[in-house]
Image 1 (cartoon, one colour):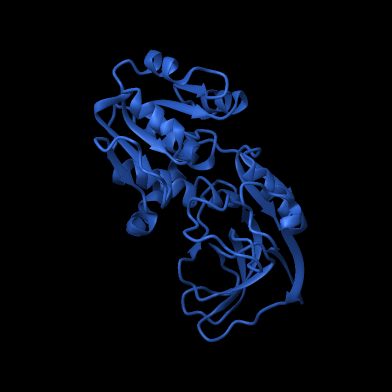
Image 2: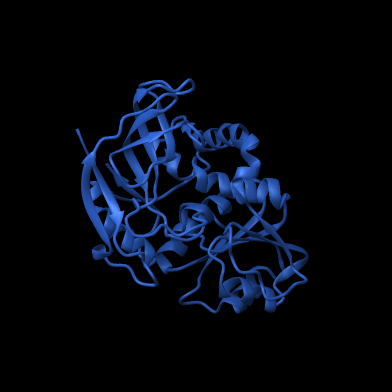
Length: 312
């Protein structure tokens, strides 16, 4: 039984080409004592930024979180036949000790959302708004990268909690989806609309919470343009993101590992919200691991809309 892997040949550095990766076949690993062998069903493709604290180098399997079947378990917690979410890399099979692994729980939603609204992207939004920013009903919440999996979920959680939600999206398509499907109150197309002028129209009293996942000039423009309210705070979900220019701004950072005790409450809430029709999501899916390099490069160039997934 062979294991198909997508390995990094040349670490992406500003640009990305499918030629930066190589597809290899290796022997399927065998689990040792306390370990389990897992087979990938769905894999997420994330830019090599954000949650990756160190850049994987040449020869490494392309990182990816995955939904996997446990096909052989010698682990005391997980059994053969379990379906789990884990860091697996872009490959058919991997061995895990069971650390940082969760059973898939999606209620009435498809299993793939365990990598999106009911996975770490959703949990990041949940912790950032409810555990870190402590948003309150009636506040105005601004979400950057609103068309991305984290931003889209953040906006919907804020809306469910009774906040006025304004998004900033990278295209007209994303902006329209945020309003029409995710029911944001408004969404600014940052490529076609004047950001600060639109913000003054939509939030004349200022923004109470800015949820920021990509970082960069958008945050600095909002801060330097005095668009935060007197109680305004910035929530960052990039581990090593650059700090805003102003040191007077209250900046809060999200580290979901520090809120792991809230994951059960998260599952309970999001499963109920989905069943009640409050949550929408988008996925950008291709089939087959051999198509992963091309799909990954689309993600790196910002051409993907929705959770970028590989169906193995």
